[in-house]
Each structure stands twice: as C-alpha cells, then as structure tokens.
Length: 510
Image (cartoon, rainbow, N blue to C red; front, side, top):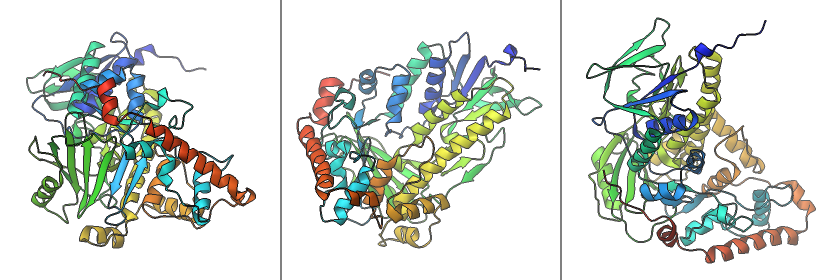
C-alpha cells in the first residue's frame, strides 16, 4: 500500500526569530520561494537588540545568492556602499615580512588532462620559475588595483575570474528587509521573552515583552549567540572548537578611506591573532581577532588603533565569540542559522556563506509539519561537513606558520591541536600535490594550492606523466597564458574607476 500524501502536513507559517543579515537572508530566500498564501513568513526582531554588523566581507557564492533572488547587482552595490573583492591578501603569516594572495576563480590552465599546478611545480623544480599567482586572473587584477566583470569578458584571459563583495552589513540587512517585506514577509517589532512547546517537544509559539504571542508551524532561530530557541528552549548543546580555533574575541572600528579602494580583503598576522582591513566605497572596516590568553582587550584595541590607516569614525567595538557548532543545527521544527548554529572565526569570510548554504539545504529538505527526522538528520550531516571543511581550511593558515616570535605563534607551533582530517589533507598534499576533495565543497583546488604555496608547503614530487611531454611545451603553455593575463589586465580600468562608472555608492536615509 502506497503512503498517502498529506496536504494537511504542509507548513503554512514560518516564524524567523531575529533579524540582522542572518534573519533577513532567511526571510528573503523564503519570500522568493513561497507566496504568502502558500507559506506565510513572519520575522520577529527588536530594535533594542543590536546586531554585530561587522560581517562585511563575502565570498563568491554571495553573488549567486543575489542572482538567485533576482536582485540587481549594481543597485545592491550602490545601496550597500559595496566594493568588489577578488580574494584575500595575507601578510606576515608564514614569516614576518612575507605575503601571499588567496584568489577567487581559476588558477592557471590545465595541460591536457594534467592539473595546471602540477605543470607549474614541474617548472619550479626544473629551474623555470614564475610566481604561482601570476597565473590567477584575480590575483593579477588585485595586485594592479584593477577590476572588470569576468562575465562580461568570457573567452578572454580573465574570463575564469570570480569575485565577491565588501559591503556594509547593516545596509545589506536593510536592503534584504525591504526585498522581503515587498514580497509579503511580515516584520514584528518586539523581543521574545518566552517560548512554548508542545508535549512532543516541537515549538508552538513565542511570547513578546508586550504579551503578544506568535505561533507557527516551523521556527528559524537567528537570535545570535543567545540561541533562544535551539539552545535555551530545545537544549541542543554547543560543540566547542576552541582547541582548534582559540581566538575568541575581536575589536572592530570603522575609519575614513585613504588612497585607492583595494579590490581585496587584507589579513595581517599580529602578535596574538590577526587584523583585517575591508575597504568599502565610503569607509574602511578594520578589526583585530585575538586570543585573550595572549593579549588583553585594551592592548588589542590600542594595537588596532595604532595600525589603521585612516581617522576612526566610530568607537572601537569589542565582540566576544566562540568557535564551534551545534550538535544539531535542526531539531524538531526549529532550524538554527548564523551565530545560533555555530561560528568559525572570520579569517576566510564564510559566515554569510554558511547562512545561505543553510537555507539552500533547508529548501532541498523542506519538511512537512511533522518534520521527518530523516530530513533533519541529512541536513545536519551535510551542514556539519561544510563547517568542518571550513574549520580545517582556516586552521591551516595558522598551523603551517614558521613564526615563533610571540607566545601566540609558539603555541601554534608547539601545542595546537590539529584536526585529523586536516593532518591527512596536508600529508597527502606533501606527497605529490594531491588533494582530497569531497562532494560540493566550498574550497576547490585553486584555494588549497594558493594557501599551501603561501604557507611554504611544496610537494615532494610532481605528476610523473609530465615527463612524457617536451619541456618546451610545458614552459610555453605557462608563459603564453601568464603573458596573456598580464596584457589583458593592463587594459582594464582601476577598481575605483569601475565603481564610479558602473555602481557608485548612494546615500540611504534612515
């Protein structure tokens, strides 16, 4: 006998608790997928509860989110005061005075069936040196301070480039709120003070400070580290990753712009952590992520203010955080997103990505009111893989350092616990540049190759099949492509000129 399709089991009302970028991304995605008469979406947030608002650097999947929602990219850039991001420039991570670049997009061209990196490695071992990043269009554009949309330059040397955005997180939240409300999302101003559950543990409704009650079929917890629903009501534990990622605080400040707007994020290693620099069109975001075992709040604040380029336009804000993941991101009829679900420190700018990724998987496994445990289990499995992949990639930046000049860096060399999955990836790469890649991972081979090279890790051997090819063919293949990228980039507008011509920032009134 076939199972009967139950129309009464359909989810008709989703309640999002918490706003900010996380809540309004969730609401915008739901509003795009469901008409209000099919599934109503209500978002509850309080103006009295501030948002962290410093997640201002994104990665390329964010562009996919905008396009998926049908948002005009230029309009979004203008109204969020955004600039373009081609990757991340790392200073002082391997050793003081050394720098490297992690680009988006392609890195070199395959030589037949052989990975470009293997051909480049062969050339290095045979005395034909070139910088790895000379073969990455994004790295060359970033170095020269230039920008052009790669989708407008297909079948050219920069056609394989990719990009993300630096944006004002609060303006982005406001933009997405306008988008969601225009599509039927109801915003309720208020603070949740009590949560009620059914006898089976499913959440029934939330009560606000003024006594109003909002019930729903499904709830999305976007309440940040408070985790009002997933932890305080449902009791889901937090798996702490401080042994892998011990930085636990950040201090952030906004400054006036000075000089050109660079199309990349800058991450500079410091004595007890690292410092970010994120240039927007109207200002620059700065922060110091640190480990409180090795530096005090006051010392970190002083160091940040000493290092910034422009005049501060805000007071430094102290942001405590903890790294880790919920043991269940989805339990019963509650999904946690953003800081409520977990956090990996901001070194590779993945916080917003994990929110959009969470919503992507949620829609793939969209449940009925009964919330089949099989759907939640698969969601939790897939999302955990994403968190662990990103965790390992971030840890790699620290654990491969050669620095021993401060207690923080000596701790990383002598005492840090490295995830076994990362140990295996590093060991495999050291053999002959092989990578362990899972299904649908965020970081592909150009990212791993770039950071391994930047952190001084070279394989012991190259792909033996290269010995079948004439040396001249291998060298010419690389040199021709490298020269083509350089020549093309020389013709492109500067990043600032491109912004001024195509998407200059506009002032949005409150």
